[in-house]
Image (cartoon, rainbow, N blue to C red):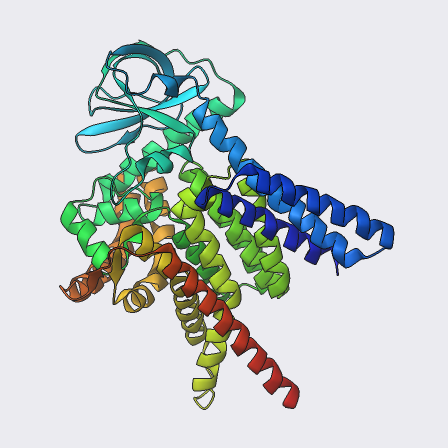
Length: 499
């Protein structure tokens, strides 16, 4: 067994240990026993010079490490000093500073405030506005995040290290004098630039076009009307206006055929795509979910460049294991992490099968142009990602869009161009109103097409509500999908050897 394959199995066992520890409560004595057996196998196999069994022993050890990593993180949440004050009847006063860009809504704002070593999510009135690194004093009731019937808000915040919330406290601005480190200084300047670019988009596009552009370019859908959000949800396009894992993965992969269509060589397209996607993440403020998705997407692009499917899946698993080592809550509690990982796996394993099927259907047609090949790539990437992410979307959101594959195939080809145009408008529009207006004209044409597709397919029958989906159903779906992919690949390999 090669070292890379052994590492692949170790990472899988580590991930499985985290998954099992987060889903099922098992007495620790079983895992200590498992660790003992693993170490015993390693020592015995080393003495007998049985390398295969050494790998089995290390798999057991990595499984226990995964279990222990989740338990340690869970213990840290229980021992958080501030969370011990949750749900007390008396109001308390806390002082801290804003550690992230405030999340501004129509009538309120949400602030992540660091108090000593803990972080509190504060919901406040929309005005006065507060800014990154402002020091504030809050007086109110500290509460534990709630667990709703259809949404585990506590787990959702726990993955970000937030164990306490405070709703509409009395807030006093203590200081706007910031004590910078290199990181906080650069991040503040980055947020300042982002704010200018967002305002430039609003100045050059009117609603609902400005809402769509804000979503597509910056992942900001907070100002959208509920009617517009419902239209996006019903047509299966809501992921395009949020910096979601699957959306970034699809966009990254679509950059390659788009750049090849513009005449770049494959090597040049790879480097341009990687640079563009990291610049994109820089300009939207380095949100953690995007960074994780871009790491996975960059691995996909590298695999596309090298043409190594097996290597790309192993590196992707290694990257996921390292992310989970840093934050094990991502696996179960971060839907964005799940979607980016599954979309990547879909492109690695299912896209080649879809490509093969499309090529077989169109083999008797006249020679295809660059544009036709790009469209085939878009169709296969979209279908592969959506087939792999479907159960997670239905399980978490209880909503199934019946026409999502159609609308995504129709709309996704214009998204890279709309995103690039949006950046140009936001940058040059901030410098000159005339330049912003001129550059917005082709964007208005693409937005008109976007809205027309939504208008045509936003029908009562376009989406259905799916309730009470069990995780057993999700697991069964992926086991069946893995079996079918393996079966098809085996059959294709046999046909290739016969020919």
